[in-house]
Image 1 (cartoon, helix red, strand yellow):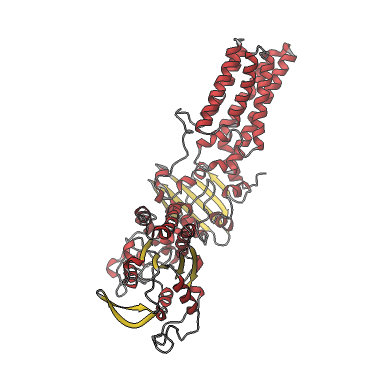
Image 2: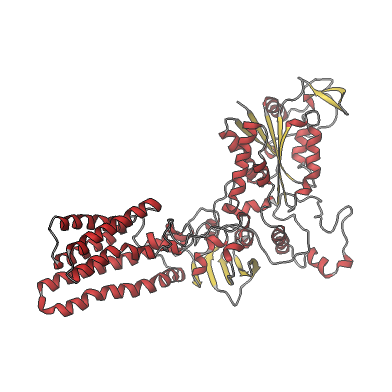
Length: 616
């Protein structure tokens, strides 16, 4: 069994982006059968190597310092694979990780030998046999900035070049803190990488290519990065000054106009500067359902502040899902840590701007603490809306599309909710409800026109069974499919046996059966109409509490309408002198229910969102 030792050299430790990269990798290694352990350098008390060489002379193999390093050396010697995790600081590893590596000197024998074309030291107990994996991230959007760090690792492994098993270099890594599900593809690749290192000792070309992909387009990353610093710098930012007065730029010695002062894109939201791109504040934020602005990250914690949650949405914006959409989403957060911001969506781009817009299409008003909990995945956004914890006014349809609009640019064109269920018949989702009524329509026509039993009962039974088998084969059957098939299978068999139901009895029993079926679904997790209407909305909305509540009310209205029709059918039989009035009253509920269904799904969600009142 292989033993993997990971060393997290980030000053942020367990809250770092380095940790976000390490843990999926280690999870994959663990799944492949290895044992794993992570050392967090900030937790250790490690002194600087002072170059006294006592570990080579006076106390061979032992340092003069009595700190935490001896225990680390024991773990290193026992490791089969050593995984070094670090953000890029000044184009190299962090000083903390470098200090730890410098203190591994006791593992080396002092005698200098020539190995090939270079000189080196052998290991004190023989050559160090562990393989090495480098996992690093930086604030720059380009992988070329890791070149010095990569060369450092090549020097460390030059005695055994094959021992450098992989270099996983994540440019723009800070964006992972705020991208949530938009970067699930990257975390999955890290997981595969951990498995592959254990199972085959190297990365597959496919996994390596995936890990080399940009997390977001570089231009977008630069906008997010530079806008973040604009939001943090009081007064005019140096970048703005550089754009206004390029001739007066005074760069630090040894740096270029595209370098941050520290020279190397530290693990920070935006150590990236590059092209002179100036926008207002933006940072990445996912949306996990139609009324939830953020989600739990695959590893680590979510956004630290509301600013991070809200101003980062453009980094998770999916232009393919937006199409030609033009909208302005205003987000007003109240209380500590709050503020106002609006997102401008137009021409396949999303830009975040601080302040309020006078042309907002949709406005969200929420307490800052509530919004941050939603963004972190600690609170379901739809449930919070139903509880009256925040309000939405204006065009509510934009809220219904948040999940697809902010599904992440790196995933390409997000697959929208299918326009129709699977299968060869090109029938849209809601149209299947009309199809489900076809057996009933045949029955109503047959019994109303006093046609033969085959037309009135057997043909509807055959059609109901055909619909049931088709739905079972290509999708899943609904309560309507199941109830219709059962009802007409029984009545069809009775008709074949010569026991045809009288017209009045059929009218009463059919509507009673329909009403009971529709109302019975209110006790399930999916009201009957939701099984059909979910195809009209983005994928994932089927579990949205507001969507389910809306459909539950519509289902209840139709169930009650069918029961009322059953009562009218019974009334016509009992009071034949009032047949004309009974017929009018019999069909009136269907007309009213149809009008209600056309109006209610648009009005109710917007009403709930705008009222700010808890929905029981």
